[in-house]
Structure formats: structure tokens, C-alpha cells
Length: 269
Image (cartoon, rainbow, N blue to C red; front, side, top):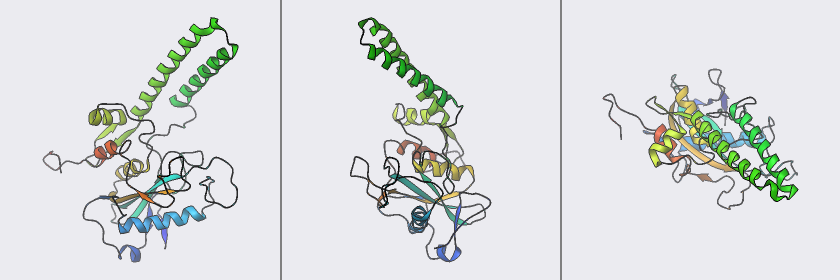
């Protein structure tokens, strides 16, 4: 299989015409339910070939017979087949969370929000939390009843600061939809479920892919996700298997992102 990254977008992988002609584009955007759309299979084969042979970064998926450094962490990967404004068909790729210690790697679309920015609010807030944790641990080690009130106050301060950071973080995750509307994670989950977003929401592959496509006027055609690497504690995740988007973190986000209106301003069903 041949794939080419274009100059117009470093993350758009163009599938050759001869390959695309063998598979009809879906009439409507399709999410993986049981089996990937044929176009997604082409993209997945190409991406998995890259994962097997790339030497740009090092992540321990637990698949090598040679012992690797670091904790074994399998990852969920996603592909989104898209059509550009020039009617070229290709795909975008993404991984959930972080990989190889970072958010940015060639061939993969960037995060919706990068919380690893060195001098960003999140980094500074985490330093404050680490300072509180260090003081609490030091006081606990002293094993003195005289520090009980101070420890209680510090834990209260830690909880409040953590809640503020979490809310601010979710406010920085803003998602576009097909109608061009933008909402933060806090808005999406409050409107859909009347609750706060769960930890890690917005970092999955599917929202990253759709966000990049909408930002660059690409039309989504089909999306699929697969697990790559050893399974964590749960045996649910199996290497190379396909999985639908998760309900807890992704379903409310995707409901917003895939919403659109017609010319009269009415919701389209």
C-alpha cells in the first residue's frame, strides 16, 4: 500500500487513486459499530504498517521480544477517512491521551488542548499541588498530633485547587461541530448529562480527529478505532481489535460534534 503526506496538511495521509477506486465512499458519515468501513480498513492497514516499522519515537507497547524501557502501555488509535476541499480522499490518525511522553508526534493530529505547555496554567497549578503534597507528607512523617489541624487545612486547600484546575482545564477544551458551533467540555457535559466531565475527557482519538477535520474544512467520511499493544489491567482491550467510541467520555462530545443544522436553522436528524 502507498500513502503520501501532503504539503497542505502534514497530518493528511493521501490514499492513492487506485486504492480509493476499489471502495465506495459512504453516503453518510459512519462510526465503527461492529466492523470498520472498507476505507477505514485501508487506512488502518497503512497506519499499523507505520507503527510496526517507525523509528521516530519510542513507546513501550509490550509487543517487542526485546526488553524495552518504561512501563508497558497499550494505546487506542483512531483513523478518520476524510475528503478535502480538493476532493482528495485520505485519512487522519490520532492516539488517545499521550504517547512516548508527549502530545505531538509526526503523522498524528495534535491534541485539542495541550496541557503539557511548560509555562501554562496547568503546569504551574500542578507545581502548587506538588508543593502541598510534599508539605502534607512531611507533616505526616513527623507523627505529631500538633500538626493535625495544619494537615487538614492543607488537604482542604489541595482539594479546592484541584477542582479549580480541573474546571479551567475543561474550559480550555473547545470542540467544533459540523455547523461551526463551538462548546467547551464543561458546556457539553452540563447540557447533555447535567454533570462535570470525567477525567481524561477530550483526550480520546475520535474527538481529536473530528476537531482537526472541521478546523481544516475536511469532510469526515468514516471513523474507526483499534487497540495497539498489551492490555492493561482489564482483558477487555486486545491487540489489533476494533472498538466503538467510548460512551462515558466520548458520546456527549461526539453528539455535539456531529450535530448540524439545515439551511432553515432547524436541527437535522
